[in-house]
Amino acid sequence: MHREQIKNQDVLISTQNNVNSATWTTKDTTWMLSLFGTAVGAGILFLPINAGMGGFWPLLLMAALIGPMTYLAHRGLSRFVCSSAKKNSDITEVVTEHFGEGAGRAITLLYFLAIYPIVLIYAVGITNTVDSFMVHQLGLTSPPRWLLSGGLIIAMMSVMMAGEQFMLKVTQLLVYPLVGILAFMSLYLIPDWKIDALLSVPSTGDFLSTVWLTIPVLIFAFNHSPAISQFSVSLKREHGEHAAAKADVILRNTTLMLVGFVMLFVFSCVLSLSPTQLTEAKTHNLPILSYLANMHQSDFVSYFGPIIAFVAIISSFFGHYMGAREGLKGLITKQFKVDAQQTATPKIDKFIIAFMFLTCWGVAILNPSILGMIESLGGPVIAAILYLMPMYAIYKVPALKAYRGRLSNLFVIFAGLLSITAILLGLF
Image (cartoon, rainbow, N blue to C red; front, side):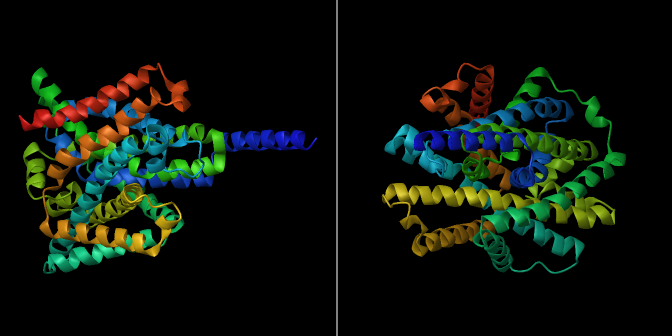
C-alpha cells in the first residue's frame, strides 16, 4: 500500500511538471531575456562590421541561415546537459558522466576556452566604448586606460558576485530598454539607407567565400551557450524529465527574438554605411554604435548609440562570465580531484575572481583587435563545443538515443565544420 502511494505521488509530480512545462511563466521570460542579453552584445556591436563589409546579398543568406543554426545548436547543448541522471549536474559534470574522466577533462578545457576569450573581448569592448563616449560625446579628456578599464571590470564583476538571482534581475532591467532603443535605432537609420548596397552583386566565388569566412563571427554574434548550462540545470530542478521540452520552447522564442531584433539592426547599419566606413570602424577597434555616434550629426545617435553598446556589453558579459567561471571551476575540480563540497570554499572562489579580474584588466589595457580575437579564437572554438560536441554525444550517449537519425543533426554538424574550416581559409 505504501509503495502504491509513492508511485501515485510520483505520477502526480510528473504530471504537474508536464503541465508546468507546457505553460509559459514569468520565470521563462526572465530566462529568455537573460539568454537574449548574453548573445545580443556581440550581435549588435561587431556583426554589422564584419558581415556588412561583404555587402548586402551575402548578408541576406546569412540572415536565412542563422536562425536554424542558432536554435538547433543551442537546443542540442541544452539536451546534452538535461540528459544527465543527476539533477544538479552542470556541463562540466555531464561530460565526465558521459565520456569518462579523461575526455571530460578535455571537453571542460575546450568549454572554458570557448567562453573565456569572449569575456576578455568584452573587457576591451566596454573600455573602448566608455572612453570613446567620454571623449567624443562628453568632450572630456581620455582617462588613464588602466584606471578606466579596472573600474569598469570591477563594477561588472561585482554584480556577478552578488549571486545568480541578482544577476538575472539586473539583466532583465537592462534588456527591456535595450530592446526598445535598439528597435528605435534600427528604424531611425532607415532614411540614411543607400541603394548602392543593393546594386553591388558579388561574383559567385566572392559571395560564397564571404559567407564562409563570416560564419565564425555569425556564430559568435548569436552565441548564448555560456548561459545554457545553468539555464538547463535550473530547468532540471524545476521540471525534471520535462526539462528538455521546456528548454526547447524557451530557446525557440529566444532565437526568434534575437534574429528579429539583431538582424533588423544589422541590415539597417549595413544599408546606412558604406563598406569603406565599416572598414574604418574595424580599423579603430570600435563597436558599430560608437562609430555611428562619432560620425552622425544627430544627438539621438550620438548619445544613445554608446549607451546601447554599454548596456549590451554588460548584459552579455554577465552570461559569458557565468560560463567561464563554471568552466574554470570544473577544470580545478578535475585537475586536483577536489570534491563538490570543497569547490565552494572561499579559496577557490577568490582564486577564480582574482584570475578573471587580472586577465580581463591586462587584456583591456593592451587593447588587441576585437574582431581579430573573434575570428581566431571565438567562432571556431565555440563551433566545436556548441555545434559538434552535442551532436557527437547524440550518437554515443544512450540517454540521447531518441534524437538520432534527424536531418537537423546533419545541418548542425555541417555548420560547425564550416566555421572551423573558415579559419583555415582565412589564413590562406
